[in-house]
Structure formats: C-alpha cells, structure tokens
Length: 255
Image 1 (tube, rainbow, N blue to C red):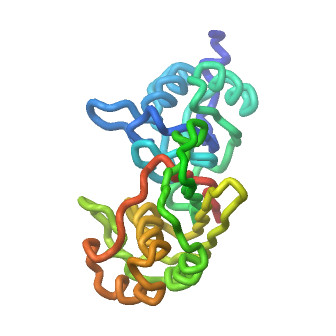
Image 2: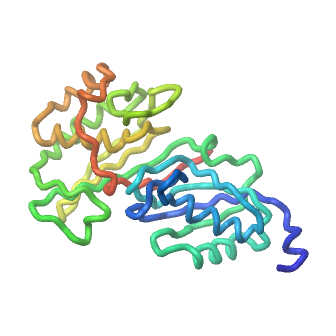
Image 3: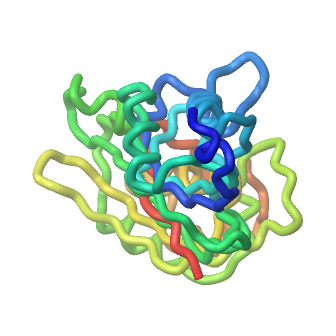
C-alpha cells in the first residue's frame, strides 16, 4: 500500500448491512460462537491496516435476520465509500451483504442517534411446510384468526411497561418502551406478516409479542386480555416466544 494511502485521515463511515442470520449466533461477538460482527470486523481491519471496532444500532439474536442493520466505524480507510463497500462485499460470505456506505460526521453514533426501528416477522400459516421458507419464517400449521390478532395489536401501541414480553436475563434501565405502529397482513400463500415500529425494544420483545398473538389467534386468549398482561408485568403470563428465524430487522431511522 502506498505511503499516501497509509496517511489517510480517520473518518466515520455509516454502513447498512443485510444478512441471513441462520448460521450465526446473532450480531454481537461472543465467546465460542460465530457472530456477524466476527465476520465483518476483521475485513474492515485489514482494509484500514489497523484493528477497528464496529458499533451497531443494536443486537440481533441467533438466527435473526436483517435487511437494514446499521453500524458505524471510525478508521483511516484509503478508499472512498463506494469502493470501500465493493471491496468489503467481495470479501464477505454470500449471506452477508453491505447495502450502503456513507461518510458521516464524527459524532454520529449508531445507537444513541437512532430514533426508531422497524421489524417484520414472517409466520407461515399453512397445513404443509415449505422447504423454501424454512430458514426465513416460522411454520405454524394451527389455524389462526387474523381478525382477532388485528384487534389485539392496538393495545400494544403507545408507551407501556413491556416486562411481560421481555426475555430472561435482561439488564436494562427501564422496561418501558414506545410502540409507534403495529400492523398485520396475510398474503395469498398464507404468510402472516407482522410489522412493528418502535422507539426501542427489549430482548426477545418482538418474538414474545408475536407468540402471544398466536395464542389470541387460536382462541387461547381474548384480544382485551392484552392490557391485563401488560399490567401484570409477568413474562410467565404471556404467550410463547416465536422462532428466531421469522424475525427481520428491516430499518433503523435516525435524527
């Protein structure tokens, strides 16, 4: 590498990445497991000729996918944003792809500056499984009443204490979260799509909301049981945790 390239100034690059999370232990590096961060970070370190640390908008669990995960990295990259993205993509496996790279102000922070996130959950509601959809949706053969589920989601919208829908071993300052919108649609294949936008989410929260909605769709709970579940602040009272493979982080919005 040329001397002038080694002297490139440090800049803050914001990247949007999509990935199939099937083969990974989530986004964040951890002991004795392969995470998305473990794949991307060494590639960027090689391009910067120094060890770098990437900071993502948040974690995704093992098996969860992303269409629009955001991270930023500060490093003296010797190439422009477009070339950086293309070189990085040429070195990444087929299940991870950088969708955009943009130099941003040095004070941009992918966690602190995020104002909302959008998730989609895919539930394949059919009598027979699909080989093509097995990695990216939760196969659910029991009959579901989508109208009951649509009636229930309105109780989740707004600011609530979502302790009843929080995963175990969570460490957070507050369990209050603000849900901005929550919609359910069903396509001709039988795929039920849950789309939820919120200012932030607790661990396993989206999957626990979806699991609870399946109990409502099966008649095990009533839609108006949701306010009672929220008030109890007891995870054991809500429904099951939906499978990780159906969840996608779609978009992170910033100030």
